[in-house]
Amino acid sequence: MQDRDERPGETPRRQDGPRKPMALDLPPADLSPEMKAYLEKCEEKIGFVPNVLAAYAHDDAKLAAFAALYNDLMLAPSGLSKLEREMIAVVVSSENRCFYCLAAHGAAVRQLSGDPALGELMVMNWRAADLSDRHKAMLAFASRMTRESSAIGEEDREALRKAGFSDRDIWDVAAVAAFFNMSNRMASAVDMRPNGEYHARAR
View 1: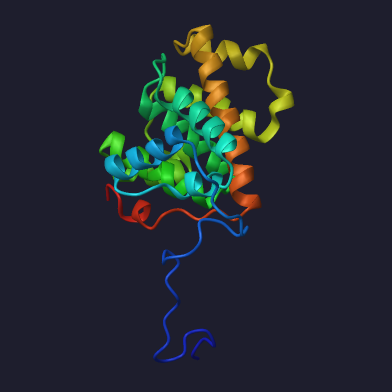
View 2: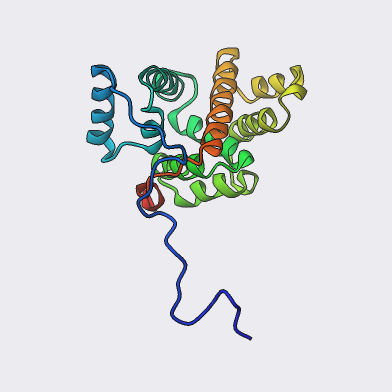
């Protein structure tokens, strides 16, 4: 029997076509020279302005604050590699089912690791991935923080220490996980959609 939704000649609409970066209709702000230069730098380096930045660009101060915190957490010197920070972003976003961040940071994991399968595993079920003890401990902590942060105790921090993380590293694991919990919730609340370029990147 033909499924009612599979009528001859019909195909589903593409989900990655052009659309507004979010559901709220907020006009872009008159950005400061610094923020204009920042968006131009994104265009130059990656070929487009990420929709999360386009969404925040309705307010110069909010865009500047978001960009400063993101760049500090994800790009500044740390005991965590850039790939490890992206892995945390994806695992937190998977727990929260945040489409925007799974698309954007899943692409980053594929790109930084050179392993498309790892990117898919991070998105779908990181526990199925062949990971080091260090990464298992790191991602278990980020996952527990996301699902039940009030239950985090000294035994959770000690598990990270045993896996080789310093107390400063533990701060960074927690800070990245906390940032993406905030970012996921904003993205879901305003229906941010990832740029189409993310879907094909590093496949």
